Length: 228
Ligand code: ATP
Image (tube, rainbow, N blue to C red; front, side):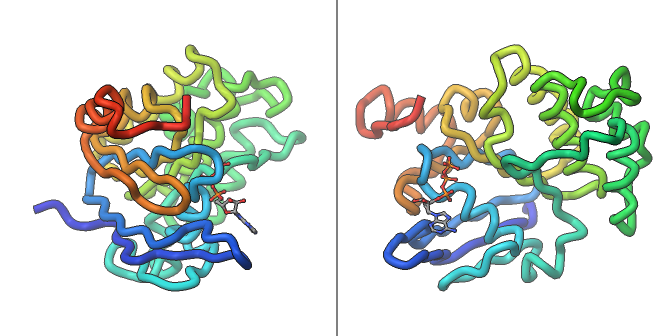
């Protein structure tokens, strides 16, 4: 039986009168690739931030590898939205700098290979395309060789070709048996990448199933996604 890597029960985060996350029960097993699908404001980012231990739940339980998220952060990597890498350093220097914060880290050449950035090693961030920037963020998320990776809408600003290139690199990790939880508002992307889709709306899980099951609900109009 695969180990449970992520478990939440009744997870909730309230900001004043807003229930950003209104009671989420979630379970992710070792080696699974799970998409959290939902429109803007559904609570995807807040959920991921609580799984990371960056935000304290208003109520409910979060366990990662059976422990408090902060106790296991060395086993977890994250690619969050709107994080900028320093513009004055090269790609290889940034990977080296971020790696220096980890007790155990992958060698820079291996990170560049896994992010498909070998040819860009000496370039500065300002010289990179959108797809290359996204792959750099991915590379920085895997520098500590995490067992679990969170990707928060990692391809939101990318065109179709760059998206494909991005997910090709991520699939290298899934081949290694890593566990991946990513958020998206795109059903086609969730279908192409994930083996399970958790659909959330207004801070709640409204469906949890295989891509086939979710697509059948959409086709049968049982589920209406207010997403693209
Ligand atoms: P997006 O796709 O836009 O990133 P999301 O699904 O990630 O959306 P969240 O960012 O988690 O959604 O936001 C969920 C709800 O909580 C939204 O209504 C948002 O406005 C609200 N919210 C999030 N952070 C805060 C905050 N710090 N203070 C007040 N409200 C917040």
